[in-house]
Length: 120
Image 1 (cartoon, rainbow, N blue to C red):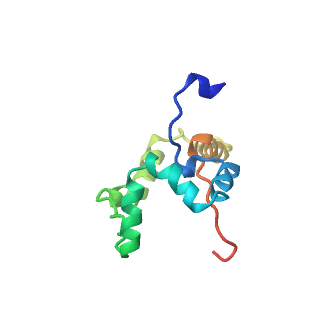
Image 2 (image 1 turned 90 degrees about the vertical axis):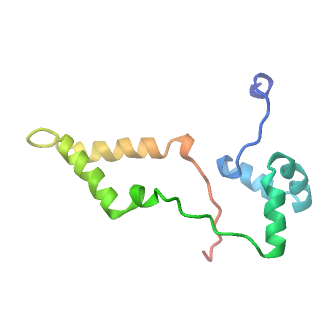
Image 3 (image 1 turned 135 degrees about the vertical axis):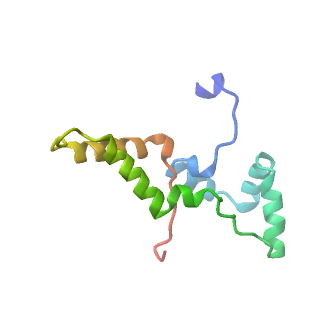
């Protein structure tokens, strides 16, 4: 029913449910490749680089230090504290903030199931 209203399009592997990831991984590699390569032009380039041993590390974004450094974290925390709760925060403020964070970050739009081996 859903497919009838929308044009089918590629979906990133990381956005698939665990069951769908396992279904993809259960297919023979050649069959998977034949179906996936036309949908992602970069796959052919990746395969060529891998065959030559020329895969490259993804460069760290220049802005990453601004986003992820201890200083950036401290600045964001200070802004939150400056926003204040009045004289004294409500006793449940911490729990409420944690609950809001969990609802936001664990929403279905943020699910990226990963498969790890037992030895990882």
